[in-house]
Figure 1 (cartoon, rainbow over the protein chains, first blue to last red):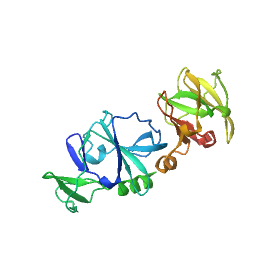
Figure 2: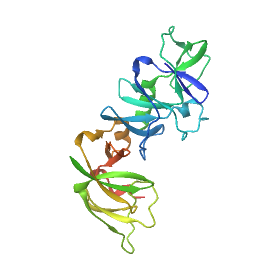
Figure 3: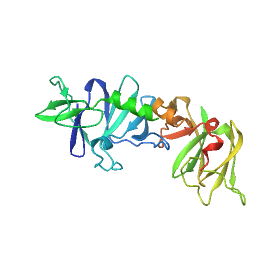
Figure 4: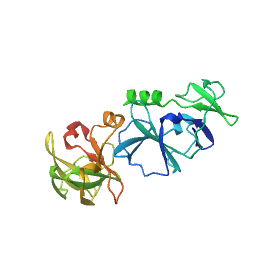
Length: 133
Length: 116
């Protein structure tokens, strides 16, 4: 599923997407790991809200409200990613090793509507955050 | 149903289990309690929160606004491991129907070394 932050598109594994919410009010967590914006209530549990902006080059103002919040569930836990926009999920050709676009935690890339974008690896990112915590 | 005491510290609102709060009072002369949240500035015109903790009674500086709230136990949401590993002082997220969610502080995770 393509998602956009600022002018940068990246792809999320649609099988991990549980819901796309609108703009949400995030409760910040002082002392949390870098990349953790806070938590939100979602379906009877608290879900970590993570900031993708630093991975996209850090040019996007982190404090600016984002219109969409994608809730994903990995093998480890559910997380929410605030983004500026998403497009409908669609089948794609097999991902290939990242070459045209570079982004941390995205070793693969996909082509959607003739646009090449990094395929974000949520599990890898969560493992990194877990180590940092 | 649980009772919570809502206090403001470092510009944000936090909840504490109501039965662990001994008192909220004016700060005494020469009393310099730490902020409830490490790294947050200690409010100059602080009130003092007297709290029962695992280390015994302790005092923390909080801002003047203090509220009481009741919440159904279903509204106390467990935090994800990513958060609890990094910040064990937070026990849950209190999700209210009529106000923004707030973090619930576990008094037993407030230790002496947590001062500013």
